[in-house]
Image (cartoon, rainbow, N blue to C red; front, side, top):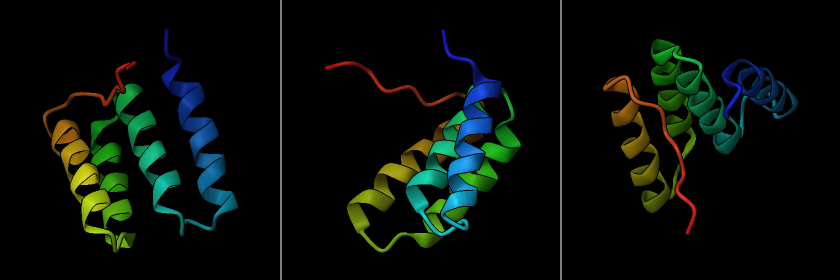
Length: 80
């Protein structure tokens, strides 16, 4: 089971350590916020992460997750 609150705390710390400049840390925070049910914050953070990206493929992946958060759905990776 995923602990959304703990995930938000850990991801927030990662963002602080990168001074909010690492899109992958912000993406992780967005996913944690969504997991905790805070979809408004997830949308905000995911949008921030997208703004920091330059790679088109990576941006496409991040936009896909943003759509989930706007639909009030968490992002969960599936095992191969």
